[in-house]
Length: 181
Image 1 (cartoon, rainbow, N blue to C red):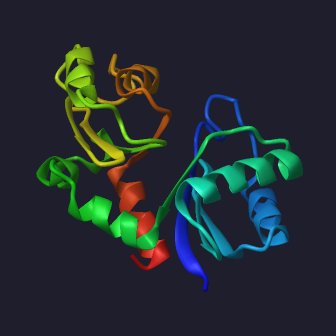
Image 2 (cartoon, rainbow, N blue to C red):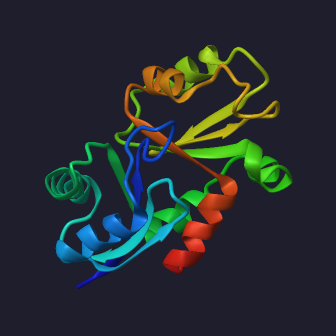
């Protein structure tokens, strides 16, 4: 049975690193047997149908396949359409996300954070950012703008002890619509 999956490639087409054309990415995914891969923007957002195991097993399979096919070495996070709808519903900072969606990011975590990681992340905040961790996601408000913040992806990863990739609220909602979530 095919299930709809949302695939997030970390650090793709950002700052000249991890360059890949979305058409080539879609072609590679079709070649590997995924159903109807669709991309959103140029930053490694894919919605596709996959059979078999999802989650970490699918992440590893995609990382291996894209390395072999495209020479693309990147970390991948996968959420089913159902999980994506749940992370939207679980947003503890929804009012902030709706008020300023371009200043709000959801970070998908590769693994569950260790106990106390949210407190460690909160301690890493040097500005007015607000952070909440729910399950395998971190929700962050950047009231002064993401580009000006000292709360970078590297800082978030160190605090949570796992790779992450962030998407702004507008992109989160567009991926949900594309996935039918």
